[in-house]
Image (tube, rainbow, N blue to C red; front, side, top):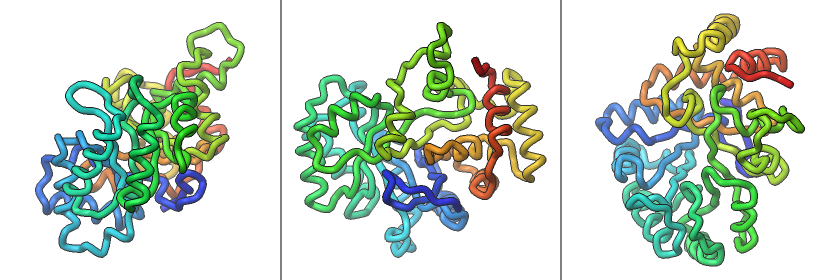
Length: 304
């Protein structure tokens, strides 16, 4: 498995397993899924306190309960801030949420804690107090955010003792806004609109690792583009390259993300063991520049 440096300093697998959908799995099935991921080289697992109403974290912990030695070989990340239909970056909520995640995950620490979507009522000093308390107690080792613009991150970083290392953002072949705006500079077209504050370039400059969520989705959870008749040119290109590299189209979609020099970590959301095996082969492939742009254009993007 290809490794990347989270935050420019912490080696981890380039592919992560997202655990949002494991809440309904049996212990046996979840154990098979997690062991397969680990056997394939995945050592990074993404959670959130709201996934399955907390059940996903419990299922994960139970799946690993028979082999506690695995805890020291993997990274566990969770997210907090969403509850009761609002976003909450208050110190009280952050601390309470972490305690809940630690209890459900049956661990004494999180390797990473992300703030789950922006809270416009955020008081950065209050977040800093929560992070400092979690860090000094050993309950959280590193911190990040999800779906934040550069200036939102800068507002937080101004008060933090340790800079944010991660920004989890939606990215796929059919959700390329952060790339589009950088390719269409000085153009009066929709693709030139910078809706994210040049977040891709900001993260590269500051060694913030982008974690790509929903790498097979188009729109906002509108559906999967692979095998979808709405995207004939893209699927034709994916299938041709899949055949060329002896992998699946899904693997090629992940290769496309990993090929970017920003060293992005892709988050898989599947619970299918065979799909995990198939997609992990993406780590062994490097697309050429021509192939990367071919896929980008096949997804409906035009270069100026």
